[in-house]
Structures are given as structure tokens and as C-alpha cells.
Length: 416
Ligand code: HAM
Image (cartoon, rainbow, N blue to C red; front, side, top):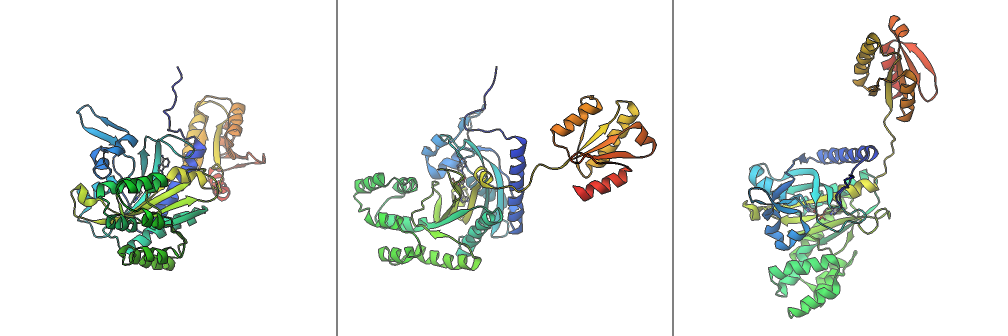
């Protein structure tokens, strides 16, 4: 019986894994250069970690279940809440700000489509302990520099949910209703949004106007709608710092984000090279306060997460398969095999090296070398062994030389 993969999950073949590992190591390397340290959290958590802020509605988007002891658990749909839980439990005494990064799989019960999966990976970073414009500017600049270093065509959209929340609060919208409103803004459901505002007896015009504001004039126009806004001042300071960092972005005051915990600056990055179709958001982030909800002191934080699968899909890798060496014992005789294993071990200290495990003839071993696109064969025969040598064959040109193993290694080091 053939057993299928579960809907929304994927298998990764060697070429894809090579690309994923390449992108992953670049991301780690960049985060480390910016002074962030890696942490890791469990794949499943108590479900309440995710519902405490977002309400029971989020359960529908999660893989949640009871274990044999009746604990209500969930596969993590994202990593920010687990990271803050870890911070409150383990790191709250660490020097502020605490700067961490993470890479891990997440699970969401969404309708799968191109670049939208039920199991996907996120690479993210958080600055815990500050919501100053300086911290926000650094987080945005880090995300921006990842895009630049990976050579990805993308647009960064910057907004501020604090501004939207100020307007809603000013209009008398309760905290409970606020998340419904934010969710509708995030979905771009304008008609539903207007209806909801009307049903609360609130004139939705100011809100509609704010969320439509884009580009350079947005702040000036927003000031006409809400004169003394802390959020606007904050946003202006942030803009100044982003200019110092040389970050290019578009102001978009309509960004509301899908998750409920944001309190201030928010940003999203979209791939703009037409490689992803509808699901082209490759990164999302912003400023939030979650620590107090998980039993810690009220601690502002700011961070982002890249959708690692989307990022990898749009990344162009300029390198091909690794160069491979194959050691070919001419005969399956004990002393030849023993020498071949010894030589292979020496080569494996430096190169990607294969050795026959199928008890094959020399010609079948060379056919296999061809099939796996090996670049060099190191042929080990009785006669060469007697002379303390091996035959190194360049499988692309067919050229070959009888040389010592030390010469062979030196030659391969120059070529590979
Ligand atoms: P998010 O926008 O929900 O934010 O997810 C971050 C990124 O994960 C998205 O921009 C997208 O690229 C990717 N992503 C989300 N869902 C899927 C899916 N079903 N399939 C493939 N990729 C997906 C967060 O999760 C926040 N925790 C980000 C954050 C960190 N905010 C502050 N710190």
C-alpha cells in the first residue's frame, strides 16, 4: 500500500536540501554578525501559550490536541510567543536588551496553496527589552540586510498599529473588539470593516482614511486626522534612523498584521520579482508586549520572522552540485579493499568521497561514478599499491596520472 504525504507537508530532495542549508547558514551567519545568539524551543507547547493573547479563535488555525495525560497542547504556529515564554522562564536576568535568533518549523492549519504550507519554517530575531526607535530601526535594518545579502528583489512596507489603536481607542472601541477590527484590516475586508464600525455606532471614516495612507506624505496627512499622536512622533524618529541605516521602505499605515500582540511599529516584506504568486509576503514583524502575559515583568520587544520556505524559493543559488571523488578498488581482494578503505578515509578528511558498497566490478563502479557526476576517480590497483601509488583520473577529460596519495590529495586540493 502506498502511503501519501500529509496534505500541506513536503519532502525535500538532496538538491533542495542543499539550497535550504545554504540559505540557513547564510541567515545564521548574518544574525551572528549583528550580535544575536541562537535559541531553540520545543515543537509543541501548552495551547494556552498561543490562545492567551489571541483568544480561542486561533485554535481553529492550530494543530491542537490532548496528550495521554489530558494536557491541552498545540504544535507551535509561530515562534515569538515561545521565545518570550523562554525569556520569562530562563533569561529574564540576562543583560538588556537580550538579542536572540531562531530557526524552526511551525504548523498552521491553513488551506495549502503555492508557497503556503501546513508545516513551514521560520527564521526570526527578537530584541527583548526595548521598543525604542533605535531597537526597531536595528531590527528592520537586519531584515533589510538579509534581503540585500541574499540578493532578493523585495519591498519593505512600514506601518504602526499603535496609530490605528489610538484612533480606535479614541473612538471608544473596546479592546475585545479591537482584535476583530485589526483582523479585518489585515484581511483587507473593507466592507465588513465599515459594517462592523457602523454596528458599534462609530464613524469609520477616520480609520478608513488612515489605513489608506501610503508614501512620503502619509505622516503629514495622518497628522490632520490625529493631531497629537505619540505613535506619529515615534514613527518619525524611526524614519530618521532608517535613513541613517540606508534602509529603503514604503510607508503603509494600513498594515495591521495577522497576529494580535503588536502594539507599535509593524513591517512586512514582499517579494517583488514575481516568483511567489499570491503568497509573496516573505517577512513580517513589529513591536509587541507579551512578557507580562506569561508571568514576567512588562517588557517591550521587537522582532521579525522570515518565511524560510518562501525565502529559499526565491533565492538564486549560483553554485552547482559539490565536486565528488570516487575511490575505485580494481579488484575485490582483501588487500586492495583494505588499501581502498584506508585511502578513502584519508580523502574524506578533505573531500566528498564515495566508495563502492555493492561489491561491483570496476566498470560498474565507473558507470556509477558517471551517474552521480563524480569529478575524479582514485583507482586503487595491486600494481599501483606495489609502487606506493594510486591512479588519479579526471572523469571530465579522461586524463590520468599515477601519483602518490600525498600528491593526489595536493592535486585535488588545488582543483576542488
Ligand atoms: P507571520 O507574518 O505570521 O509573523 O509569519 C512570518 C512569515 O512566515 C510570513 O511573512 C510568511 O513568509 C511565513 N509564513 C506564514 N505562514 C506560512 C505558511 N502557511 N506557509 C509558508 N510560510 C508561511 C509571525 O509569525 C511573527 N511571529 C513574526 C514576528 C516575530 N513578530 C515579531 N517577532
